[in-house]
Image 1 (cartoon, rainbow, N blue to C red):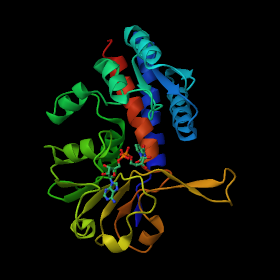
Image 2: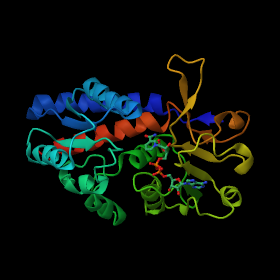
Image 3: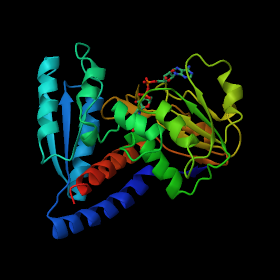
Image 4: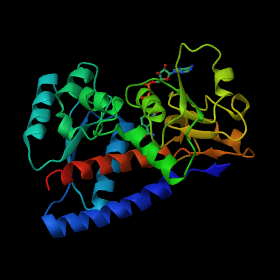
Length: 291
Ligand code: NAD
């Protein structure tokens, strides 16, 4: 298997972003600014947001982290979002999901101005994406497209099976891979928890995007030789030998692909870093609109 190295690729793209930021600063006095809102103390969310802030520093962006206790009311959170919408100094912002159960995530997503929705979750951006119009693409699918492009993975005419139909990964991924253009022009099957006989569908796939959230769910005996396997899953499994008592695994049983042909993304170091990089690209795009 050849590795689709998201970590390495994201470093390369971040270097390009850094150069562009230096130019923006010198020529237009613009420094892209990404803000992140983190509610509660979910360890995975904390780690994702930390990565995002660190990446901002790396490329020369300004970043603001707004941390709020889990007890924050929906109204208070919506007020924070309104302030960020109105703040001309902020080019884009994200509200890290999941949110506590008493807060309606859909309401929050809808409250974010589509012009600052660098996660690409707002229905306006989603709708524009669906029609092939200019928009902020959802960060994870955007990162995956970048990866397929950089590794020159053929998508035209390929059978692509997306597993998982979430609004942030599976569904937009299926739309983007079936659009006209590159990466795209694939024949896409969107599968989910009610799909019958997933194995036989997976066997037809040249490209598989796994976004399920179940550790090691897909293994090499379920897929055909030579397939391109993109593993979106990030699952914590207990591992007493590790410092924190857990390790991260994907939705794909990576080891089962060891002596197979094709391509695979590792977890960690595959789709995760590309998602953060896509967020930076969206923020840069937003900042450049000021010119
Ligand atoms: P989700 O929980 O919203 O959706 C999971 C999807 O999997 C559902 O659509 C469901 O129908 C499908 N599913 C569940 N059981 C199935 C089965 N037995 N067969 C087929 N389909 C099944 O998931 P999500 O938010 O898209 O996240 C999926 C995974 O990706 C999680 O592990 C998450 O942590 C990870 N994730 C990673 C990144 C990244 O940057 N790498 C970004 C977002 C999510």
